[in-house]
Length: 291
Image 1 (cartoon, rainbow, N blue to C red):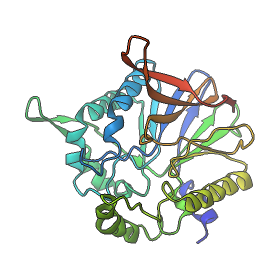
Image 2: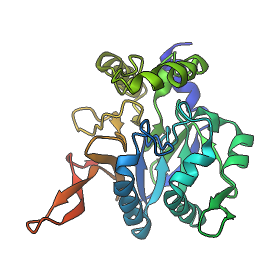
Image 3: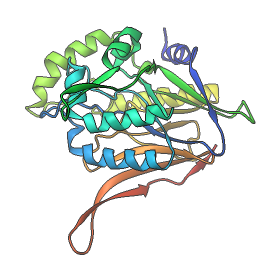
Image 4: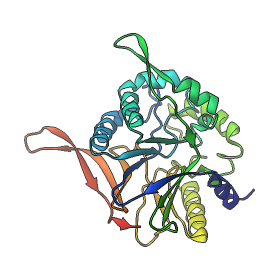
């Protein structure tokens, strides 16, 4: 099966959500939440993420996570990840309570394609304050893809998925890729050796992945929003393929906001005031694109 066919299959039974002028979505991807150890690339940006999530929750955005939310290839125990970032999961729960929370799975958290796994692992969260389990997501469904479709014009739509489908290793042969990451590349990362098969770390693989994603979007004439490569992209010169980036950049996190049927690529980063105090700032990093 070709990359094109795998992408077609990903959207065959996609969940459809309304795209209205007054609806607001924030799309984040590739959080790779871990257990707070040296391999946890999310740990350094946890405060940036928490502040951004509070902003989007308070401003009535619907949160969509495009996959690789948890780093389940390096870590077997999801409960340890949830305990490490219990504040973030409790905020996720608030989004969910107001029907503003949707989670897709990517290759590094592909275990979430199993409904029984999701129902068992995401139902409750152990609260360290009360030493009791609290309801987290009940119920919760994880999807491979989502289509945001304008009710006034059904031809106007946004196609959302993680993007690993264009990689044969990360889709069809993902058990092999998981084995290599968990038992080979994870230990070697301590010595500065990066995974050469990763689209986020290997320039040539990243470029090839982006070409395939853009080719599918151009051929189908769909506006595609993906993650996987960790490289944020939103440009009027390439109106079909966009990328939300990731939450594990060295000095910032990136995401795509959708408001008034307009896409805006933003980053959250740490800045310094003249008095030396640190603050977190939201910055627009590309020209907004109307759908």
